Length: 265
Image (cartoon, rainbow, N blue to C red; front, side):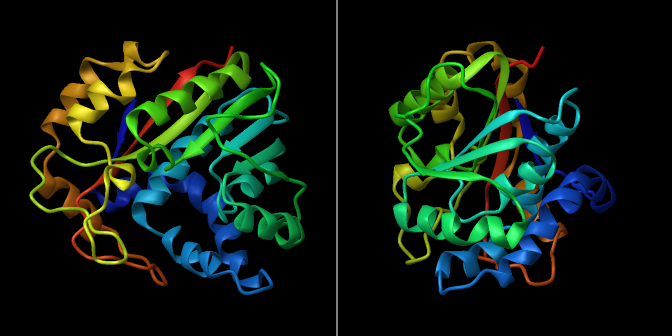
């Protein structure tokens, strides 16, 4: 497990090279997608966030290190993002799922033509997938688990391990808030977010997410790093990295963590 934070601009630039290589060109093409899908306009700006650049780089770096680029990949919770298409452009055979039918239908109609890919889109819940056991070499799940309760997240992790072949790897990111945070997280309607939309805190990370099969070994050193993370470090991270065209919400006090289950052999 890894805290995805880097306040030094030069090192941040180095650590997000794979985002600029593989993901940023896809984000720029989102403006070419036809139709009036408001989530596409929003996400074309959300995906420029510094937090997202580190999240996608965390996964893309791992994929670049694999010995075989021609892999069967499942992306869970794809929404309207072009991340499945970026992985397909790297040579993988990609399937993408999301429970929101309107977004999946939009991507099925327009994404492959826009991004020159052949991604298969399915409307499915990550907790109950239709695929047989051991179907995929790689499973990715970017910034999805924080929208689930603890029991739902554990169900999802268990289901994704089921469809992962022996020796494969599942790669995740999720939002995390330092334990000294003094501000509530606000949704777009100005209301305080519910648990299902809230970044993990230390106690929920320890007691909910890390009780899932395959993650118990990741405690210890990583939790100590989480304990020492401060709200000021997180706010400094957001202040340090601003990008043209990015959509901002003020007073952010969370970052992301990255982790994996399994291991590619």
